[in-house]
Length: 136
Image (cartoon, rainbow, N blue to C red; front, side, top):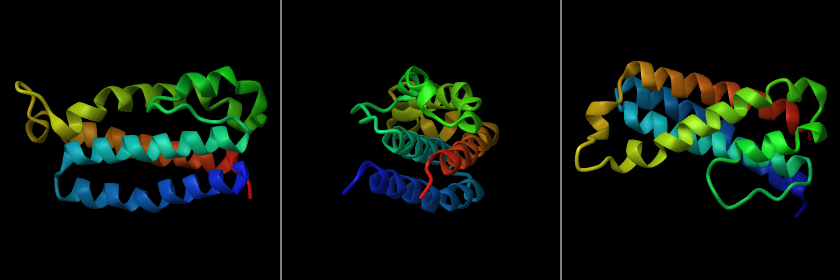
C-alpha cells in the first residue's frame, strides 16, 4: 500500500461520512454532528498529508502539520490551508466534550443548531479541499 492509496482511502472514508451529518442534524443530534464532523475533518486532513508523503502524527489536530508543509501542496490548495487548520483546531477542541460531556456540560443540551450547522459546513468544505489535494 502506498501513501497515495491510503490518502485516497482516507478521503473516501471522510466523503462517505458526510451525509451522516445531515441525518444527525435533521434528528437534532447536534453534539453528534460536531463529533462526527471532527472525525471527518481529521481523516481528510490526514489524507492530505499522506498525499504529499508526510506521515500524519497520531493525534487529532494536524492543522499545524498542514501549515508546516504548506509549500508541498499545489497552489490551489495552499490558499485554503489556514482555514483548514482553524477548522481542525476548533473541532479538536470540541471533540471530547461533544461526545462525552462533563459533570457540568451535557452535550445534548450545550450544542445547538448553529454549532451543528457550522460543523457540517466546515466538514463539507474541508473535504472539498481534500478532493483538490488528493488526486488519483
